Image (tube, rainbow, N blue to C red):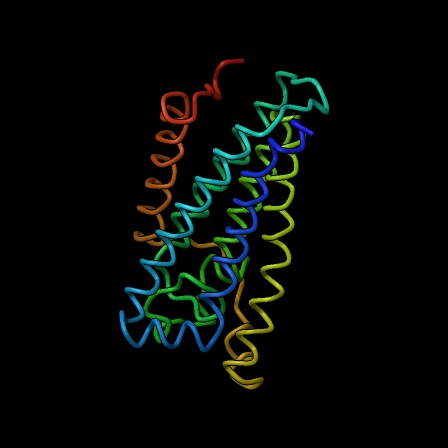
Length: 222
């Protein structure tokens, strides 16, 4: 009974996470909030809330009763480091870019499907980042609480892409959806893209060396 009681905060954090991510995006609620704080205010508030709730979920997972599923091996760290490097670069390449096909886009009226950059390869880059982050952390955290947490985030990143596709198609209309989603895949790197790439690598190094003092686990401690 005490073991089950220790999962209370963990369950509450997860319920709050999924509820807080779903309700504000409902058209009626989002429209009401955006009309009062503006589109930028809504994005800022939603992002702040997301980070805060995600932090709670991670803390709650660390407090949950420990039940080991597999032993840790050194090679797992290398997988994690590689996936996180890719996730960091994708994050900075996508952040603040025009993207009417997903969430988190800025100046969406400037989006050009013929020159879509990263969006041509992944319509929902921020969800791809969430998926990579989740998969990267499952291997070295072989206990029930963390496997459930990272596993659900990975599933959420996949299901979320389909949900957003349906919602955007409904909002944009079939004709506009087809026009915008017919993106061109092209491997090219502009000055802006090069800067973002460098920033992405800097972000990766920051996460790497801030992980131990902030999270309490050294990712380089093989």
